[in-house]
Amino acid sequence: ETFSGNYSHTEECRPCTLCTGLMRMKTPCTDSNDAICVCNYNFFFDAVLGHCEPCTVCPVGQGVYSHCEYDHDTVCEECLDNTYSDRESWLDPCLPCTICDEDTETQLAACTPSSDSVCHNIIITTDLGPSPPSFTNYFPPEASESPLPGGEVTPSSSPHYLILIAICCSILAAVVVGVVAYLVFKRWNSCKQNKQAANNRATTNNQMVTPEGEKLHSDSGISVDTQSLQEQQ
Image 1 (cartoon, rainbow, N blue to C red):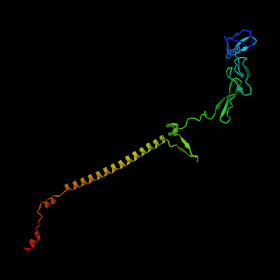
Image 2: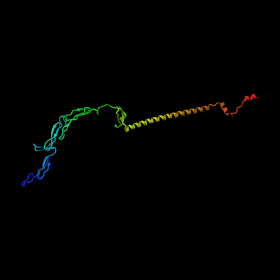
Image 3: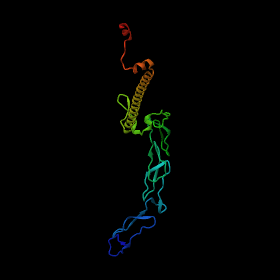
Image 4: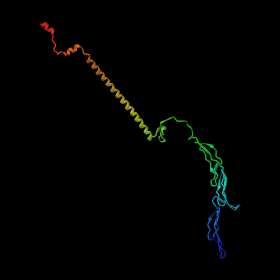
């Protein structure tokens, strides 16, 4: 490919520049303009050395103030005024330090140019000791208790709580049925023993009959008044 940058009837066309090595084409070659080559990405042209050099990476404790371009190097700055940078980078600026919440957190480590603040949540991690066992410990979190506006705490109406009520009612009903059955059986057994004792007494009375009674039972039932007959004679 060729181009001619001047209007002339005598000047010959010149060949277009080829972008090679660490160079990339910024503007392509046309009939009237040559191609423009610049340094590749992550490289910049060092005018003193006359060739492309890798972009500078900002060290820990410094952030990027100006990004590296094909015509100039990275510009780094120190992280000050509650900012930090904990990694080497040619893209990231200094980041603002984390501010710990005074009500719920305590600061374990202060922010430095090379590290962020370290905050510790004092509410979540406070050790309250082992809690006493309760029925709610055997169910998932959805069966937990929920406070009412008046301050009273009532268990939420979850399926697990309803199942617990059904089990308690079933056990109570079984106990009541068992007690009633025991009382009925005891009453029936007592009546049976009383009836058997009465039958035994009747049998004993029948067996204790005197001989005179047996003789009277053997007579025909006709009695003769012997004293009256003697007086008549």
